[in-house]
Image 1 (cartoon, protein in one colour):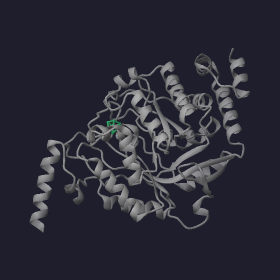
Image 2 (cartoon, rainbow, N blue to C red):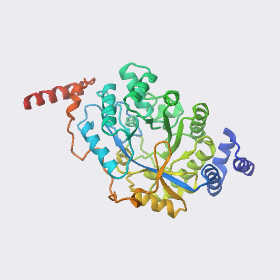
Image 3 (cartoon, helix red, strand yellow):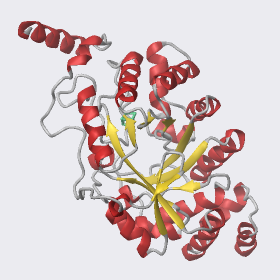
Length: 408
Ligand code: SF4
């Protein structure tokens, strides 16, 4: 049975649900890896492994969604909640450009005190200062949050964000696209499986390319993990708008859900399954940020053809206990040691060139930056321009405008 399914994969045939589940459950790990590697080699026969230099910035940690797997968020009114100021974000972009970076991956909590106009003003300001710099920003649940907050339909939100400068939507917040799982993870309210997929459908129709993700290892069954992949495959058949797929394991430390982290073998088997099932996705990233550099490198033998992002800053996974750091030199060393050719890319997976540190001097980055320094809870001056919705936000706003009148 396994041999027949393996022959199907090698022949480039699409696997149905039963065959994929059989393979996932019963194929030896080495065989799963070889099959995924064969699919990867068919799609990328040149042996190139790409990566992007960008910065992963979380503009606020204040969130009303309260997913039980999340160690990052702070409730509205929390003393250690933050919103980054426009100037802080510009500084981060300057630092990113200095090391050859081309985009910001910008995501954050569902903060009721940041209206749509805050995002539009920010995007416009970024594009005015850095016209060619890209914004890969706001995962589907954030778009839905803005739709509810503004009482505008999702397509209108997407259109307005595009008009302000949005270039692409990251695939965060997908977790597992099965509503039973989403209810158990307290993330059904932020976006149902259908709602997440529909934001991506609308974004693709509006001309954006996006990524897709999966966070596994919480409460889902094998069937539900596979269902997630099949739903992504179906939408990709429909729109062709996904550039890449990224999967990572749930990081349990400091979360309400707790539990233990999935093993490295579970990660590699899941990645291989994704490469085999997602036959209409060109690119699969290695999630070394959660798995570490060594498993990340091994991912290249289990279907991955991309090392994701050079890590300049990380906040979300670090809050749950993982803080792996690889700068460009380290990524390139891992890629070459695995027998591949490393190339820099942009958000559309177009090759930009060879490693930048071989072209010019760039500083080594041996430590991850954070959104804010510990203990910095300053409130950006421009927040006064955006009417707060929450009670805590209104009180803060009154306090900060009184303070600024005193100093004027
Ligand atoms: S995962 Fe995102 S939406 Fe859920 S609580 Fe954390 S920050 Fe909020």
